[in-house]
Length: 273
Image (cartoon, rainbow, N blue to C red; front, side):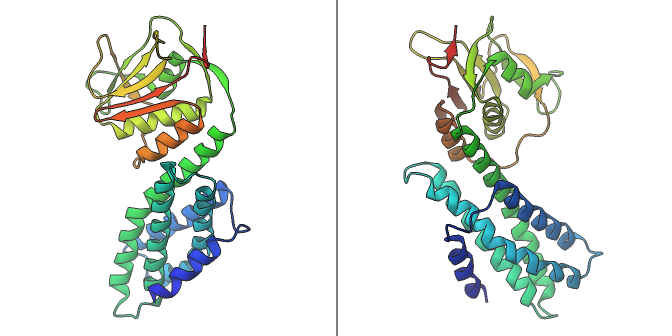
């Protein structure tokens, strides 16, 4: 029964020796994606899907332990804690659906398979987004820094395109090179997440002011003098604003979000003349 499997996921995940690396967490997600693909195919029999479920079920407690490890390293008021709890809820829903599909009788198999397919379609993108966020938290906390310009960041996230191109955003760049010290991988991830979270947005690189450091800002309105650009590659399908806030804080960036606006601000100490 579903209740019989809630204990093992929680119990094994709570062990400090059960923590796994992001690459191992991704391996579990790949296995889940494979099950989802087969469950969707009308040419694949139920027996084939059920045959793969024990391996997936064995990996779910380890996936839960991955998110519990993240929660253990976060303060109670860190916005990432809510994301971690959402991830654990998704793991539990998948565990319940997998057990139902595995235990279903012949008459119940069609409904159980549809239920598993629906849960995987809803929860797998969330789990993938949470694993990626955990990787960014780890990287941001490691303190890796390099000199880069805001112009370079915009060019790495966006590429020139026609104004009528699908997915077009407007980009506004400062007149000169605004140099900062940051982890480029983390900053690019934050920008891509912000663009996905604020539909039909613009990316504005702002120079430092008298009372604020330089900033990258995603806004809903088109800026004056903005040029049409499109994202390089697809933007993430699932974005947790709390995860963006937590990763930005770990990277030493100021973060502010409001309807139609999201800002990542570099402190004066990180800006280079």
